[in-house]
Structure formats: structure tokens, C-alpha cells
Amino acid sequence: MEYMEWSRQALVQLQEKEHIRILAIESSCDETAAAVVEDGRKILSNAVFTQIDLHALYGGVVPEIASRAHVEKVDRMVDEALREAGMALKDIDAIAVTYGPGLVGALLTGVSCAKALAYGAKKPLVPVNHIEGHICANFLTHPNLQPPFACLVVSGGHSHLFSVEDYGVYRIIGQTQDDAAGEAFDKAARVLNIPYPGGPLLDKLAEKGNPHALKLPRPKTEGRYDYSFSGLKTAFINAVHNARQKGEEWNDADLAASFRHAVVSFLVDKAMLAAEEMGLKKMALAGGVSANSLLRRDMEAACQKRGIELYMPKLSLCGDNAAMIASAGYYRLRRGEIADLTLNARPALRLK
Ligand code: KG4
Ligand code: ZN
Image (cartoon, rainbow, N blue to C red):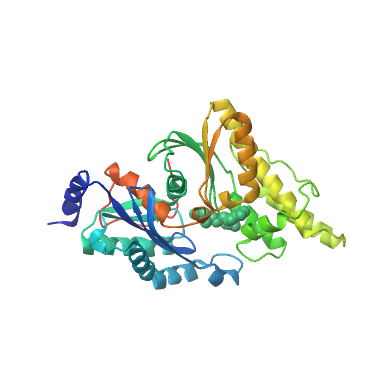
């Protein structure tokens, strides 16, 4: 029997099953990860190998190094995820994998591994959008959360405000016109000599600084709920360089706090504008930047003030991981969205 024919039959049989266990693989950027999740909500294992040390020397992710490290680690992470979950491949119902967006060579490693596993073990293959995975990290943290809700996705590569209308059904409310929020944090951190990825350390440093020490512009955007971080980033970098040239003594913590405040207030204000004007009652955060301590605090306060329920992934699920991919894969599988073995990496995949 052909793989796809077999896979479709397996899909029908899964409808009768009480619990569905998905093994997922994530390799879109600089984390090699594998996880097993039950029914889209319960994490049975979540193995993550972060390549940060390999890239820190270069001040950012080097695609060639990332691909090679994924090749070296992906099998091990799959083994670890199965072992931690106390399972063998035969106990798994489907294989989910991130197929975009991300670095093409990095994505291809995970996609190839997932296809080989799916073919070898005769399991349905579920393609997952990385951004959707970030959103689904909220389902792993909040067992009762159900669509519809709005979700602000802020990561190293993306800044979007989505309306999550149903499982797997998204509408873009707003998005960045240029850089992503995480990218801006990383670039701002670099000028303060904070090693890559600078976001988390800049956040920590900012806790000790004065957020009003340096005044930064509020970027203008075309769309009412859109974002823009490029001008803010450049204004910050120029201000720091000018200050240094003039020999002015600036406190790095004040600079970090000022930049963080500018980014976070922009994110929160736009999300709240959309919430008020569109009557949104439930809001979620997702992506690496949703670990930002000021963003979490200010969102909490802003939502509380307006009677909006706020959902945030737990800190360990904000960054890239495969549990979130397994959760997204579960809802895609339930909609019958499986792939054949021609599945390819899609570096510029969009979520709509
Ligand atoms: O979601 P993620 O792990 O990878 C992408 O899909 O891009 O996000 C990584 C980004 C990096 O830019 C990193 O600096 C940023 O998230 N980040 C933070 C914090 N933690 C991670 N940015 C600001 N504050 C943080 N606490
Ligand atoms: Zn990510």
C-alpha cells in the first residue's frame, strides 16, 4: 500500500482513539527540539537543545552552523523525547514537524527527519507553521483556553497581532512593517555590548534602570494596529553612538530600560487599541519576547484595567520548543490536514 493511502486509513482509525499522542520536531532556527504531547494539551516530554553557544561568537544565528548542528542533534532529541515520555515510536499516533517559516537548511533537517520517521513507522505526517506553534504554547499552559481570542505573537522573526477565530483559523489584525520586536531587542542589546541573543539580558539589565532616562520616538505606521521597530532601533543606536562620541556618561541600565519601555509601551498600546475598538475580551501573548518581564507586567495591568482576560505561556514555553508544535499538530490532525512525502521546507510560510 502507498504511504498516503496508509496514512489516510490511520487518520480514520485515530478518530476512534481516546488519546492521541504526537511526536513533534522543531528545527526552524537555533533550537533543535523534539517533544511528545497528548491530546494537544498534556506535555509528556519536551527536549530542547539550544545552539546559542555556537552562534554567540558571531553575534547572531549563522545558517550553515545551525543546519549542521540540527543534523547532529535531531536524532538524539527524538530519542530523548521518546525516552522521557516512556514510549517507543509504535506508541505514537502521528509525527508533526515545523515546515516554515525559518531558515531553509534548518527547517529541512527537521522535515527530512519527520518524513523518514513517518514513512518508516507508518504514521501520518502533520506539517505545522512555527508561528501557529507559538500561539498553541498557550494551550499547553492554560488547559481551559479555547478560541476565539486575540494573540500578540512577538518573537525574533515575527510581530503579529492575530485573531484566533477557531483552532487552525487565523486572521491578521496587525503586523510589523519592518523588524520584529525580538530582532530590535537583539540589535539594541548589541550596541550595549550584550552578547547574542541580547533580549533576555537586556530585559534583566533594564530592571535596574530608569525607563524615562532617554526619550525615544513613537513610530508611525500605516495600518492602525500595525507595528514598526526599525526606526526605534535606529534612533536608539544613534543616541548611544552620539552620547559616546560626545563623551557623555550614560548608565547602560538606563539605556536598556528606556529602550525596553519604548518597545513594550508600543506593543501594549496597539494591542489595547485593537482590543477596545474591536471589543476583544480574551488576549494571549506568544513567542520568545513574551518572556519579557515588563511586557508581561504591563499587559497584565492593561488587560486588568479593561476587563480583558490575559493568557501567557509559561516561561519555559515562550521560546522555541517542539511541545508547542505537537499541540498545533494535534489540532491540524483533527482537521485531517496531513502531508505526503513531498512535504518541503517553506522558509517564508505565512499564517492565515
Ligand atoms: O520565539 P523565539 O525563541 O524564536 C523565533 O521564533 O524567533 O524568539 C527569540 C527572540 C530573540 O530575539 C530573543 O532576544 C527574544 O526572543 N527574547 C526576549 C526575551 N527573551 C527572549 N526579548 C526580550 N525580553 C526577553 N525576556
Ligand atoms: Zn520561534
